[in-house]
Image 1 (cartoon, rainbow, N blue to C red):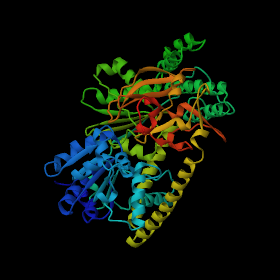
Image 2 (image 1 turned 60 degrees about the horizontal axis):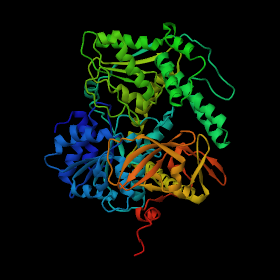
Image 3 (image 1 turned 120 degrees about the vertical axis):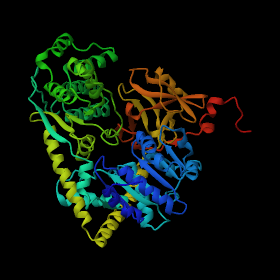
Image 4 (image 1 turned 180 degrees about the vertical axis):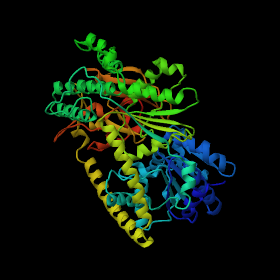
Length: 619
């Protein structure tokens, strides 16, 4: 394997067996450098065992097929495992049989906490951990859960720990805007990964030639013609903004806590109206109208008395979005008379689908034969996309941090590529983009300052941060355990979040695979009705999906059925579809991990006895 000079420079610490973070821009070949380090490690380390951790499912196959397998597959046993793979249930066995595993971080985290022999692994089973997009190793991320255990073992001097190799295009500043705070953030990332951070010092011109920066242009449009005045109430911020949406979410929670259905329902309708305004701001009025129309049709309710008027306004060219005109010009400039490939980043999944419809229905864009596709997913879509010859990147009305901005910019890898920012004059997107440019430079300065620290000062600082982190982690775990024991399960009553119908108690719930929360009480069936079949792309060892379930009283979506071992049907419930009444009031947890009572693991034999009473279980 041949490396470029700057790649050879940044792998030296890793080749010496030191923990290190490789900082190179998107397109600079971080993964290739990691393959080189992995190859050297497998060749020179006794009983070597390597895990490559990624934060998105699609990166498992991408790293396997395009990097690790072509270079290492002939000599070493490589296994790729993600949440979509049935092999995850045998993770412990697969690790024993493989030289190298490529998996999502969550798969490793699940294996570390599993008590089943086939699944369980220890950190000490590995000799090298490669952590992709390692800037995510902070706060409550799954990367930091894994590395939290690592650091605690290191502080306690427990066992021989694997070498760490982190990869990142930008550690960021952690939202900080001063150099001192940015340096603290970079040091914290180093402490979390127990690593130094390395970058090229001697071959910067070579790197710039390999990864040329795209030409950046601000495509600014004038303010759009308004068909109504902006409305601001005393308690809610301006409509058509994400801040307004946050206020409406809190309003709905207040309605649930007070069991005031009028407030809760008003908040639900206001949120849909706000979603429509956000779509209107981003794409076309006709898209915004369709969002509202579909919502009210789904609730079997007439839209509004002024539906006809809204539809006419949506078709009026006077109120069309000037951003789309500017975007059309940018696309035509790039796609006329030449082969081009581009990525358009926007705010939401719904907005992306509206843009897709716009491209496909735009006669001018169809004349130049632009073919569009949709890519959406959990997390930050800017990361991990493997499109080497992209020559146009458009950030369309986006408000993100400097890391996402750098990741997006780095997707424009072709020579003479263009990075376009489409935004309204005086809007917040331009201000955010300027701030991100500043923070990008601040990140570089912070890393340089950390790299200039003496080895002794760096080690002392990292050791101090690690000891603090261990103490905080221990106290946090104690608080979590205490929170889980705050109420007995029978003290927590579940009611539909929309109509407040009492339906069950906490003692009716069990967990399957430590993830899915099912209700085992047969009496619960009378509270819901079933709908269409649920289809999942992946399959599971013990269960398969059934039908969607809704509140029998109001139609609220509650979740879906699980068919366990093809024998019993169990309702699997979304916690956000319910409010929880406790001795201290009503709560509205967003995730199951936030409930304040302990949920037992599902035991088929014990929990299903009442359903199969004809059998003599005591013999």
